[in-house]
Length: 194
Image (cartoon, rainbow, N blue to C red; front, top):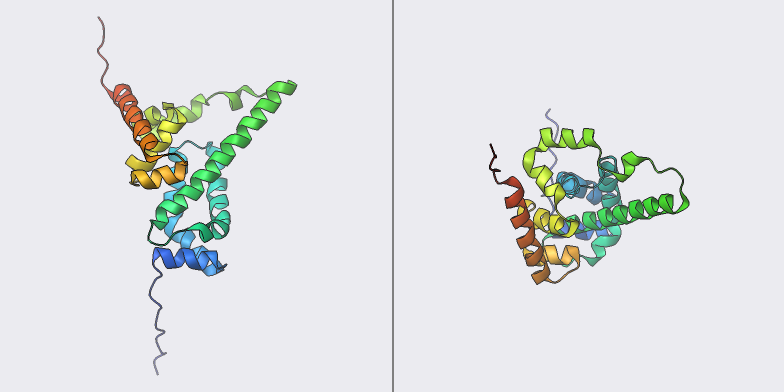
C-alpha cells in the first residue's frame, strides 16, 4: 500500500508572509529568512558594513523583523521593506562603531589603528573578489553609496529607496546622480603620462 501524499499548501505571497511574521509565526520568520537572507547579506556587504558584522547584522535584521513587520504596508514591495530593516540595522551598527571609536579616542585607551583605518589586506581581498566596481563604490560617501546600492544594485524604486533612507525622493535622485558621476570618474581609464 502506498503512503498517502500530503497536499502541500501554496507558498505565501510576500505580503501574507510579512503579515504572518508580524503575528509572531516562527515558521513564517524562517520562510522570510529563506526568501530574503541572500538579498539582505548582499545589501549589507555592498554598503560596506564591517566585514565581521555582516553575519550579525543579517541575524539582527531577521530578529527585528517581527516587530518591524507590523509597520509594513500591503501593496508595497516586501523585499524593499526587509532591505529597509537591514539598512536600519546597518546604520545602528555604524553609530555604535562611531561612538566606540570616539570613546576610545576621548579616553586615550590606545586605539588599535586597524580599527580606525581600512584594513589593506581586507581591501586587497575585496578588489580581487569584487573588482574595481566594488572598490569605487566603497569610496563613495555613505549617503551616495546607499542610494547607488539601493537603486542600481538592488533595483528599488526612488520612492522605496527614499522610504528606507528616510529622505525625500529628490534627495535620493541627487545622491544617485553624484554617486554615478563619481563611479564613472573612478572607473574611467586614466591617461598615462610618458
